Image (cartoon, rainbow, N blue to C red):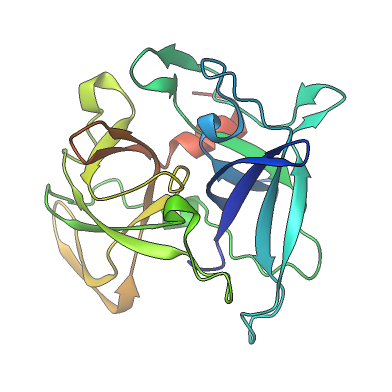
Length: 242
């Protein structure tokens, strides 16, 4: 998981204007690679927030984590945005973009060490997750992380709404966690376990298994409840089909 995520710093000119979390995702059909994050990380029309480019940080030596490099990614080409949005993108006054996820095409260089996420680690359709179950959020709260080794912070979260159900009709669920600015765009995983509970049976694995279940985007004010968009939305975005 640690080679899947990256800090994101947003810039306008030479001025740093924000920070967030992103992660790499691979289209298993085409082999294309994407950087996934929240839409509000790279554009927010309401707040007149328009970064021109982002800087991410990738490892270049699997045996020496102190060896990593910064990579600059322009967000526009010939004046047009390079990112891909959901084909049915809409907006809500309270929530913002629906869904609040974008896919930025990237072409990793040979020395990048990246372990992209993919639909292969989506949870089974009949998985049983119940409110209170432990989850893991990997990100960069307030831009804080182990810069020396380029490693993110893991925060514990608890499932707060029924998994698989669209909260208030939206394609996300809620988690209870102390998350901060900077974890926007963070991937959310199930806690590693050797016992996978499914509707009709319990599977026992020889080693711990974790599933990628969503993308964190926002916090409900005063509630410490966070929005997590379902992971399958990424496939709709890169396929450009709901």
